[in-house]
Length: 151
Image (cartoon, rainbow, N blue to C red; front, side):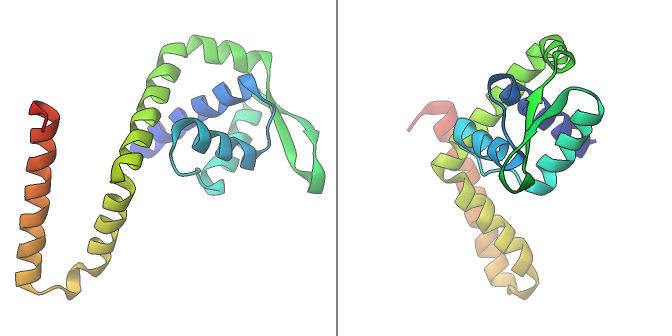
């Protein structure tokens, strides 16, 4: 369910971007990175969504660029679909801006550290696990305190 929601959300973001610019898949990823300050979505996410949007007649290939890159544009059906889902588009854009802000605050490093921890958790001693547990709990408490009460 989460994956379906994520794909629908990214489809709306792609349509919104194509409403303003004709772009190829890589350019769409770059625009997402530029607008929201998040990591450029993978081609494994973007290209299947472009294919799906094209099959649904929400976008079309405008032209083929250098090295046969497809340059996409939104169709009138896509514009109508976007207008019908305007509130959801705005929610998705707001959420991506928040993720971008989190990334700029060091969230990317935290996510990387957690991935590293999960990958290596079996090699940790019980003492190391306890120390990490305490560190995570302290960090979570401090974040909640700052958000709720300020410094």
